[in-house]
Image 1 (tube, one colour):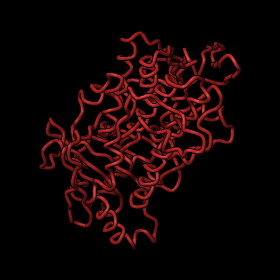
Image 2 (cartoon, helix red, strand yellow; image 1 turned 180 degrees about the vertical axis):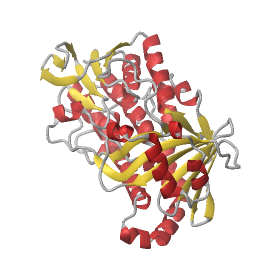
Image 3 (tube, one colour; image 1 turned 90 degrees about the horizontal axis):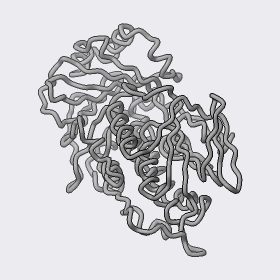
Length: 412
């Protein structure tokens, strides 16, 4: 029988509402505290929800959030040096979904509200006090709130991570800056196709849209990081000029950037990756999503893993008698999986922002990447076929047993 009856969820982005929905399903009352003064509508570009992420959303009745208004991807291809190779897909799985983060956020936010979950805005966390009876969160506006546990779903720049461990790592820079746009150019492919292109100077990707236009994303190599605020202070016309310089000689990259009005460009700032986080939890506080495991965007799994972890955390709190034991079980179940995905994605980052030596070896590296990508079951099968069995009880490992035994009944 769980001793957890209430939770404070810090962060109202993607992982936060899912955590609140899963906790509610587990019989735990959750309130979401968001630092922004209002809803975060319109923030963010496109992101992928893999089949495993869709399955995790289904656990909390939110699968529609990844489907409504999304582009299902049934075909993908990789091109380099004028050669294009179609990539095989895993059999028996639904297509990956490309969604706008703003749309996914709004759908999850509205679903949480419709189920009676309270969301408090303008609540920037500054401190937390833990004790035998629970945890008290203190906010910048002078207010406070208490519950049995506190869930840090506050993203890659998490305040909760630093409260749990002041020495916790800061996000690392992947070496690329993200931009996104919608071009008027038609690429001659049907919607449902995602194309990964290694241009002469930088990597980009593009996908046909149902209205005949083409969505695309650019990964510009950069020496130092740039915050989202700094990136958005740059005039769109300046970004447009730089994109034409970088991709102007690529096909179809040059036509995509030239047919994209500057007011349709969206800068995401530097893309980050979170290094190994030694401490996922304290006695009363725990991390989920990008706050604790943020693989680079090369993984295609960031949002999906965040959703999975939110669901798995609720399951552990439901089944184990106290928060420390539930948090320990949650970490045993999740850490090996998310770190394996992060390690795979980190290898791809070398190709997106190659140094001088890597540029010379690019043909060899590309052949290695293609050999990997052409064996999808071996490379992606365990990631995308993973499913959380919500109804199976979480059990602690027997004395002397390894972490694998504690995962029984979780993912398959």
